[in-house]
Length: 68
Image (tube, rainbow, N blue to C red):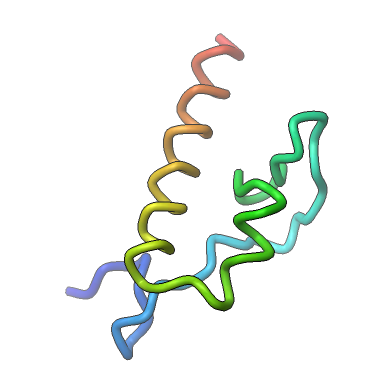
């Protein structure tokens, strides 16, 4: 089974879900990427994209914990 975070050619899929709006911290409310990460995505290496995705997961977890 393939990793859902990667495309068939080994590239990393964008976490964008089409809910593109920045919060007061300049983070996208849809994918949890910063403005700079969104801008960098198309030219980022696979390693950079994976790092960005990990940051997104950490931000989402932190947001969910603070909401509790």
